[in-house]
Length: 184
Image (cartoon, rainbow, N blue to C red; front, side, top):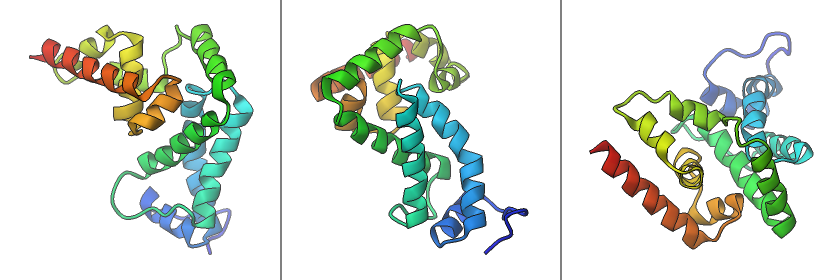
């Protein structure tokens, strides 16, 4: 165990493994490092602040209880995001039409505000990828963010976006085709 006033040094992967093994100091450090950005990223996808808070807590509980184990491969932040994104999808599945309507209204109210992913994608400087991504319609860009950036499956992306899985596949295909044409 580590002292609460002296968080354990080390990389996130080491901290995740220590937290999963019951190291409270490591757990607190992981939470301090990752909970704020995780909550901000979830808020860009969910209009319900209470649900976002619950999902952040569930994500870290999965780590603490050992139901989610980080292995040595992969980015720790991406691993945490994947847990949170899947918990969000599961949570939204339970809402049905009411949840999709709330999400749609939230997106309409905040459509001028760029999400964290949009800001990151806008900063991409390889070729004209940033410009090509900006020229995609919001629907195509949302599918790319869900499937490529967030790593969700087609079914998970469909539940998150409130559209049928076939529509996710079609939009992903159209987005890739449009990007390919613009970048060649």
